[in-house]
Image 1 (cartoon, rainbow, N blue to C red):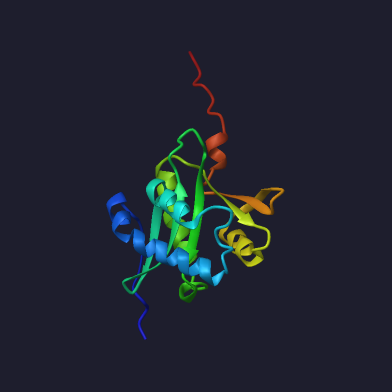
Image 2: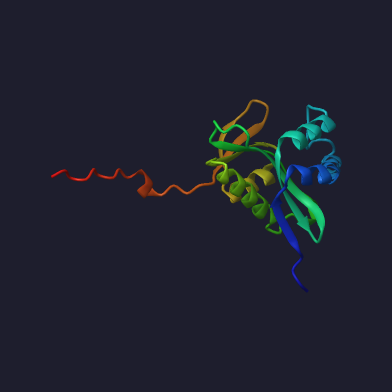
Length: 172
């Protein structure tokens, strides 16, 4: 049996406008699967409107079907971190290594824009998700009073040579 056709790419605004309904459907299905706990405390449709209008997206397609995405914020160039708003893969493609490909796509876009880290908030009660993030390279930095963990992953390699001062040439 052949490998499935997989595509991971940074979507243009026009492409996102065309695929917005599919993104919404994925989120609504997951919200129902999680009995309303995926997105809490805000109106789901207003949240979707906001991320589709403002965020960047890396999309995951398997066999011609949208099966996941990562929405992320990279517009504040004064920060050193790109912020992951929502990472979602359909249940049938989880556990196949595709999350790593999606995050690699996000990291590539963020690095190109000058960011050094990816950051996100994860929930304490989502132990499997937090473990996945840790396996991907995220490290917990802080916890909130409302049960969330702030995590960060470096996306650029820092060479030890980059910090070594170069001696001034001798003047004769």
